[in-house]
Picture (cartoon, rainbow, N blue to C red):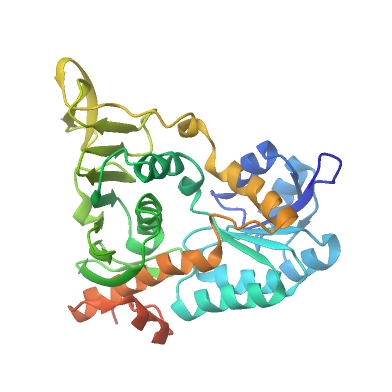
Length: 359
């Protein structure tokens, strides 16, 4: 795409809370413009249509026929991701940018990828951290900054499907997307509720076999007490990196034997551990992400859609790659329910999401 080419026209489906982040990203991204909005709630449609000055619809089929967008962004509840993605892919759009997690049921996730590929449609899943700070960390590790990679740990509040998907995607990205073969999972089923259209557990803990020498651990919900949201620990033979959640800026710190400026401190009011500046004796210092800490990953995702459609270059958030994340999640649930390790390959035989609501 050149500067003289028209902007790609984006339609956003789903006008709940996450849509605001997409509207902001589209407004900032080069090469795209908002062309329409869609939601089942006519009041939300009228409000957003009026405020943003674009056509509004309560039916995706009508939107596709009337404005023929280049990109459809799916920001609805997880339970409708697959259905809307398939409608858009079959409806003539060039790209579908779907919110995470990819889908609820493993069969649906596989169909999203196969239908999109058959139709020549670019499918991306919005694991936006992969477009920003995680990229800098991966480059640092790839260049030997931590020596040999030994272990990765990730923590977040929430459930494994809805929130753990970001942790898993980020840790696999940092590790260089190694082949994942097996998952051992534990689930806290003391309370099983409903969120975003699917059952959710109180907490989960996963041990992911990824490569011969690298251990990957993920804890969510009740297993992630005293941890910030999206907190990661990356341990190598020459030092460690600590992502202290989403809130701090900067939020990446390194410990490698050199004099530090921060020490780990626990704040009982916030109920998580964070790096606190100290005068002497600190084990941690700020890690330079080369400016990527300040990059809006959601904006970068849209700009890469423009580039990928123009050149055919792969997109880091490609749906087929994201199937690995989806399979790890499904294997984790299956393992927690059966109390046995589950091969990721075996998930290809599963149709339905393993967790169900109590009768």
